[in-house]
Image (cartoon, rainbow, N blue to C red; front, side):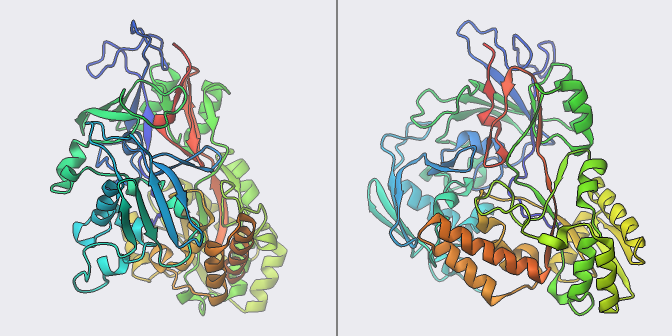
Length: 531
């Protein structure tokens, strides 16, 4: 399935028994310690082999979050605060002046200056260097010259980035963009020492970071061991463990059972099928739901199918979806019925932006189908690897039968489905799960107009004008009004239809408290409460 979320690294925190071949000895299960100095440790396990771990190579890496101090950070409520930057200011939302915090260094003691960031940005932002996080630099002036659609680059540095002095540099965006404080919180903008540029892949295996932790050991098929850097000068999460071991698990069910048995600390993103069991086994003290959502499921209707499925058919389809029952009965509270393009982690969120077309109303749906004269079949595409999507598609198909409409569930292997989407060859709507890089409305609304994201061939001059006005708005309230206007346009055109928000549950032992940033749990922020 075509999934835009950059938060793709799923981690599990576990404490193995001391007799285990892979063990890290803890005192009390669940974040305790028997060290004489009272230090604490937890063990975070990737589902599968540990891949690339630095921000330039993997913008969703849980390990990189611990190794990197970006220029800005995100609070649990989604607010931005300064980290590697002392200040970030703009009078016009186009030119941003960055003052780098004094005294911050890489873990090897190398000073971090304004030039460090400028050199990093020019390296990662240049397409010739093939950095996976390159896309995040798209809003900066000069990106197109560094990343031409065809031919060779016509520049070697961003025209929009200027070094002012040792502690100051400026960033100029292509257009007004008040999301820059959020953008600079991404791992894509982690500073890299000069030594990293010669061989980025080698650096990825032995990174010299600037964050709360340093990498002490890496065996991709076994574990990565991180320890707090005593020389680190920046923000440290409350109660953060002194050591985190990210350990490879090959089965989520096994990891879950370790949490239940008290041999593991935290399981990030408990699968929907385990939530009911988790409630029974762990209770309120061992199962935490992140109260701000950051994953949303939608039906997407490419505009190149508008003639085949006119708007009345699309509206009717949405109205035969019983979102309340799907969430309550089918998924047992693992999802929440949703009527907005945005999650509740975004300031512009409205609970019922979709209105009547996201309300279960079979009679109204039947009337719309009769009005349209539609008599065909609606193929509902989804990844054959997703049992959640399969259950959703079956429920909708059964609901459609009640009004004489034929909706055919169509499972497709994920890779083939992605190719179909990217080739503009869908034959019907598709179920898609999306996430965001940061909790801002642009990630959920502006992104719809970027064809590379959804491949809908969708454009709307009024909606795009509202997006531009939102990004240039001088106040948050003015921005919110414009984001909601753009959202209304998309919902009216029925190219995206909200389905549900996926509730992110964390399974854990009583001695640890999971924490998130704008709706996304981050392992290095796990708070250890038992000494």
